[in-house]
Image 1 (cartoon, rainbow, N blue to C red):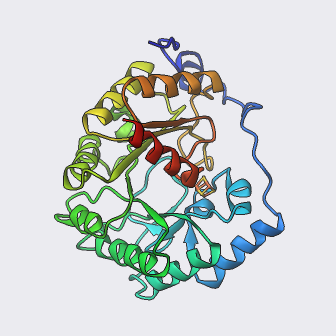
Image 2: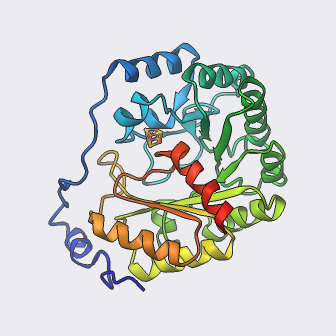
Length: 311
Ligand code: SF4
């Protein structure tokens, strides 16, 4: 077993508790500045089709790198979320009605972007009877029709109290079903108050039960005050739920209104977490300070399929 500090966050969280110190952003959190011509072209295509992206709404640090490679993650069903997670930059409120032309607009945009692997996510839509599951399915179908050779990854909400929603999404046959646990169960009340850890875990497990060939994926952020043992437990829980692919990235505070960073986890600890995850049986673990659910998703999908072939 890899060695990690017994308490991953001991010193800095103690400092944060007494209100003295905010950890400074370390040198290893370096990103490519947005603004290249290819970046501008991605932005143009997104705007031309009236779409939202999680890249922009979440203030993702990787946007310069990803958009330069035309890799934008489309966020469907609007830019207003019914949840108010303490880590997330997306606006909370009463969302607008669904746009029936969105599935075709998404399909046209990903065609123009020339994506081989498409990642679609959404805001939470607790206001809709099906949580937006049928809309997700329509988007998947529209992409399949426009780009039959592309692989499709969906990063969905938890569909809490939305009977049949998961089945609707899986019936549309995405290649990857992703739902992020985001953090360890102890921190749910403060970080992800509208969600339930075991519900999210069960969602992932059921996705695999419905379709054994489907790749399942989940992600957590570190630096929120979690302990090493808690991360190990989350890994074990995800493996018990049959999850194939785990992403681990550094939490970055989007604004002063959001949860504070308790600790910047150094790159060697991310490496150790990756090795531990692989030893626990994940087909793939992406773990680095700048790892996000959709970061390098196309390359990782190829790795995932290659890893399944050899098992
Ligand atoms: S990592 Fe994901 S969310 Fe961030 S810019 Fe890249 S595609 Fe967008």
